[in-house]
Image 1: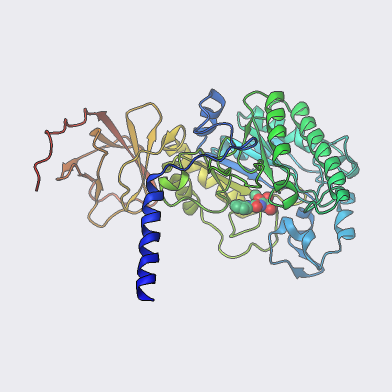
Image 2 (image 1 turned 60 degrees about the horizontal axis):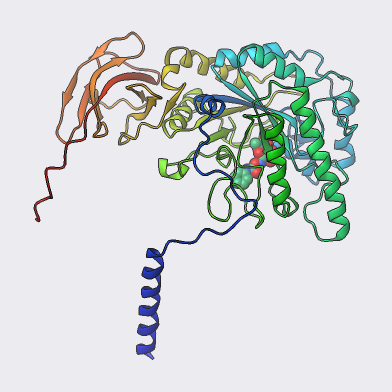
Length: 474
Ligand SMILES: C[C@@H]1O/C(=N\OC(=O)Nc2ccccc2)[C@@H](O)[C@H](O)[C@@H]1O
């Protein structure tokens, strides 16, 4: 018996070692990824350099503020329609109340400009199906509200005028539309969902034609079986949308391949121009991003994107949001902070404060954020490295000042540091060489730092040391 066990195990181990050496044949896919590696055109290069963005969730859910008849919903406020306490029929007539009479898109855009964001993602239609633009494919739109005016146009125009690129959030899942299906089990399901797919294609065409400044589409609500079973349609839809607007940027949440895989296809290749799975989470290491472009979308409270009277759990401070921004950019991504305006279009005081304080920090330190990339240097405890794209400049974004006042750095072998300078005030800092290619950067004695700060390292590429011949056998 024992012999059998040993025999089976050794066979297994043989088999695995054999497998590890045999290259896996790619699975032939009609509707998998059509590109491997990053998009290298100018539109995507601009996206890659944004660093900091803003998300805005605004809609009928903002009226309920995460509560109903005095009870507080403990889920994400924009999902309150799905709460058993809220009769769908009562939620669905909230369009009759929506009337942000004092809404001022220009004020939003100026707040965003001051904050230093380079792109906005704005909810045109969330899961509840209510359209903030006057779509001609449904009557469940802003035109059916007392407000009547085209909010999407007001937002797109105001942000574009401030030089902030606009991306339109669109939920495929539409709880209000009679032809939406979670799964395709019957012939009737498929007939209805075919109508729904045409409705979706028509609305997206409408958005791109009405708002030609749109730089990209941010898809959501694509996790159900009905969409997973529509891989071919998602492929043709993406290609169709990109034929309407060449250069359009679409993340990995839209597509499914013909085997129902989302984000990455059956061969593990990203389907989309960037990875959209980093929602309220940040990659730990560069390896986690698998060489893809990516951004992280983040709520200021622990969860909840639409306005809620009571924010859930911990509310992120400005320093935490700045650190998350630095963390994302240091790993080659962008960081997108979500704001959930009240039904009247005003922001809560905490969000206004965060935007102002982040803006004050960006005013001094944005060189370390805009158009920066992963530096590839060994991470140190004091904070994060970013590298200016195409320039011999590395930035140290410092959050943790050691009691010694000496910040250790270990440049990658292909660079030496020529000079270290405090970004604010331009004071040059002394450095002390250590062994193993490391150095100490000495902070000025007696200076106390009360905010995250940046040190600029002027670096010079060095030829890799020629291998000194075959290593002596030790
Ligand atoms: C930005 C958020 O996006 C959502 N959902 O996100 C996800 O489904 N996230 C997700 C799902 C699977 C893997 C990773 C992220 C929405 O339901 C939510 O209301 C909000 O609009």
